[in-house]
Amino acid sequence: MINRTLVRTKVVQTLFAHYKSSDQTPLSARKTLLNKFSSTYNLYVMMLSFADELTTYAEEQIAENQRRATVLHQQYNANRNFVNNRVAQQIFNNRRIRNYMENEHLRWDVGMSAIESTYKQLLETPFYKEFMALESPSYEDEKTLWRKIYSQLLLESEPLNSALEEMEVALDQEGWTVDMDMVITYVVKTIKRFKETDNDELPLLDMFGSEEELSFAKDLLQWSIELAEENKSMIANALQNWEADRIAYMDQIILMVALTEIRRCNEIALEISMNEYIEIAKEYSSDKSYVFINGVLNRVVNDLKAENQLFKLIKK
Image 1: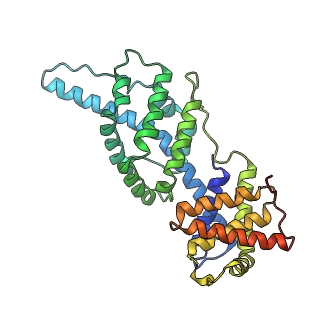
Image 2: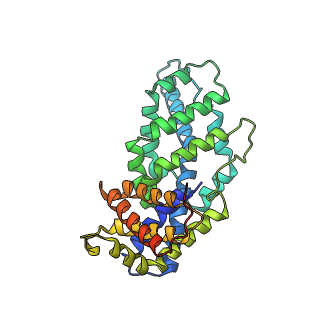
Image 3: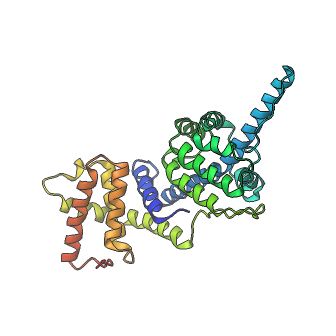
């Protein structure tokens, strides 16, 4: 699940906090980085379990409506298309999700406001109304419904973002609101892989697709710390009519990690390395920072080429 694009972002975030901390040891930085990865994966599992939580809440609303109808001696025939969906039932029965949430002390009680708000919004969506109008929804109908709930309803949900902010504090997590968009794409991808015949061992994504991704993360962080002073010197030499101490702090960190990858990760094409950090600058720095970072990186790369110190793969 955690790919190299996310690794780069998390390394930048880790070093941003690392150099502002009083505990500036490589070991503490590595611990911080691994905690960031764990928090992202925790959010992935939590958002998968959201389907079960939302379905349970809908079932409770039907039960409450039934009680009211009974008291008033009224007839109430509930449409159970949504609460009977098999996708949520599979998630509820999944031992891996249940065990993981229990071990990591993850729970939705802190975020119940998001469940309630989402359900109210869901009732008004055209795709929900279309689903509820089906005489007998198929398993594929149910999967399609959940993909739409995640990608159309939750992706831009202010109540969910607010709840996640509270849950970060209550559950000792970090970066959930920042990672939300990316995590939802992985939840949708996971649901697409579900099959009706799947039992309580649904095919979830692993935190890392391979040991290579985890090694890349650890190495990039360690090398960035080791090469920090050299990278700062290269950046200073590349600046034209600009003092190094005037560079925005985040821009400096992005440049340092980018140069580390350019200098040490020779198997990754130069264009890929540069473009990845320019995109990080667009996301996490000021509006024009990516232009500045692109210019500095190009000057440093040209200096390295002139000195025969660049061993990167060059795309043709």
